[in-house]
Length: 181
Image (cartoon, rainbow, N blue to C red):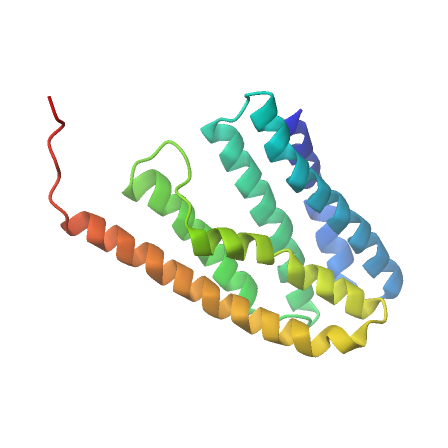
């Protein structure tokens, strides 16, 4: 059931990004519907997986990848019409790539290795598309707040990537411990 909810979010990527490329209010309303559906599935899939004891490394990777694709496609689409600076979706993409490489190849873990700042960023990445949608629906007073949020997210994403890089470098320099007997 949880993976089915995650799959719904993945199926929403293409329509959401299409509606985010358009500047009209009708497309904004349809984008808002897709955004709400994605958010609801994101809030429900984790608790359902935990309650049914179906949490796995693979389902976690599926969830994070679906979130990433949904959010970054909408932000790239918004950037294509000037709603966001291009640096935001580029930073998000680079951070997600680093997250995957760091977790699976550098630290050789079977599941994604999260960080506190990365988690907060991941949640906040849903906000810029929603704010852009609301602005297109007439709430233009949100524009300065959106601009501020975008640049805070660029900065916090770069900081998060720096933290991950430093932790990887520190791990390389620590002596490995032999397993205790």
